[in-house]
Length: 161
Image (cartoon, rainbow, N blue to C red; front, top):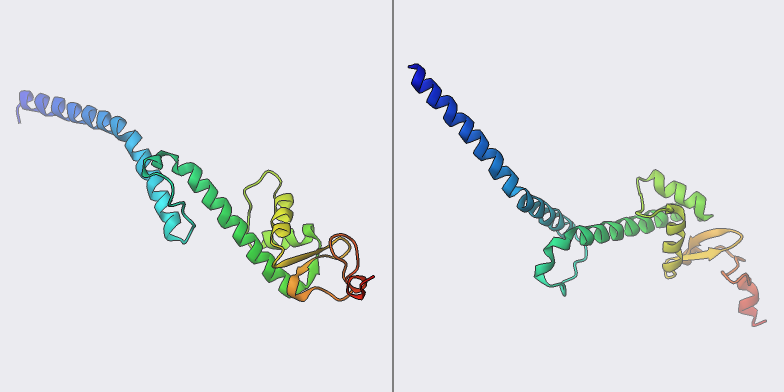
């Protein structure tokens, strides 16, 4: 190969490389949006609840939606794990219960995860029952003589006193 053709080849390769770099820079915003959409679709395929009333033009906000779906999933996993732990241990205080739930690999998206866990348990009144003295138990397996959250014992409540 002659020196001229080597020079032309090297110049064309440099030009090609520069064009590839420019193309990648130009495509970066679209790549980011595509990645967000892909992540959102992965979440929806995993059975997450989607807001179908949301206009289709808000796809740029998928990171917010993704965070909400991830938090909801973590909340649901925490409650399911708490239910399993309480089936095994019957009753326990929030801190102890949260430690066992964490050991099952559950992490909540909150600044104070234990406090958020207590809020979730309180909100699931159909599954969990709180007793200030004994801690949390499953509603269907509430211990005899346990007190309600207001401090009154269940025995005095049934007597009509």
